[in-house]
Amino acid sequence: MTPRPHLLIVDDEAGIRESLSSILNEEGYHVEAVGSAEEALDRASAGDLEVMLLDVWLPGMDGLEALSRLQATPRPPAVIMISGHGTIETAVRATKLGAFDFIEKPLSIEKIVVLVRNAVQQRRLEEENQFLRTELGHRYQVIGESVPMKALRQQIAVTAPTNGRVLIYGESGTGKELVAKAIHYTSPRVRQPFVALNCAALPETLLESELFGIEKGVATGVNPRVGHFQRADGGTLFLDEIGDLSLTAQAKILRVLQERVVERVGGRTAIPVDVRVLAATNKDLDAEIAKAAFREDLFYRIKVIHIHMPPLRDIREEIPLLANHFLKEYCRELGRGSMEFSPDVMRKLAAAAWPGNVRQLRNEVMRLAACARHNVIEDDDLLEGLPSPRPVNQPAKPLKPESLKKAVADLEKRMISEALQSTRNNQQQAAKTLGLSRQGLINKMKRYAIAG
Image (cartoon, rainbow, N blue to C red; front, side, top):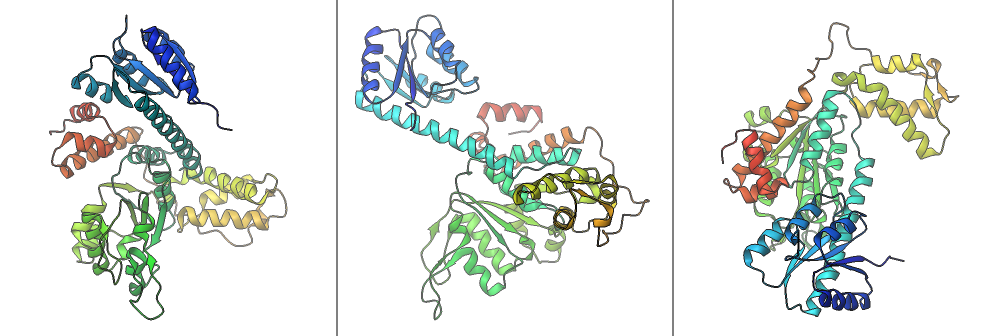
């Protein structure tokens, strides 16, 4: 049974506190009431309030100051501001400070009931989204303690809350789809679909209908079908190996990104879609553009943000951590007892070449776990040879300690510049795209000396 929502009424007029408490109690809410902002902040510190009806004009601290302080708490309630002589300026300021809504006295009981109901629904939806982001984000977490992996996690954290398109570079097997899922499942679109399509896995004759859908009657025996863009409506579409698309398919995807509509094969109706596109490739798209094999205009459409996946040979120190992670995952899935690698086997895993990167390492760990005769995987369980170790004279390029901080700063600066460029220096729109307040954007522009 869903618990009754906790509401707090904050008003210095006893009559208003009593009447609102009576009405909202009858609506099924657990209602409390106080007469000052100081009491409200003290009560809100418990973190169990879902909605607060807060008067603007209060003795001592006013409602707007209390609202500002509430937003800095770990679990602020949804706040409906009440004013006996409000102005547009006051309402705008309250909204900027994070108020759910603003209502003037004399109060309309019907409107109060509707506003409270909507505020509770939004608050619970936000908490459910946060729960999903936490749970699913953990499932698709990027693990590793090296500088490149810490920088990668920071890129995901910065990128996920925005609607910016992302191009993920990396060799086969480096985990590009994992990063795409990590971005989606820690984004505001977490409740919406994540749809993936491997552009290299489909013949040209089927690719268009898979992307955009097909209408009935296009060919004998063909049933109407919804395409991947429509399936991902409201969510995220991951286009893997986008560098393998034909120029014809590239042109049609470019139109969808520009117009935000799709037309099914054989159809004439433009169908609106709201899709965040994440793309991945193991090709050098700059070289493909130079060969006229990839459209430059599409390249800049999908590369609002770009992420580089390091090959396993460049983060060799992560191999023991990854191998143990995969082994625990395998044991958990199959309900087996705990297993571990002997020191000798771990040394050989860490020294192997792994041309297939993390995917190859994962598959090898699963094979070893399935074939091992004991709970400790020993050298004689290596029935097949591991990939040859890399030559000693080809060490991985060392990374400077400041690389993480610099990588994050470079990413933020580039994202801000590109957002301003795409919105023609409209700071309000650019801030919205980046998931920032306008003041937050201005502060970062000053920090990075970005003109706007």
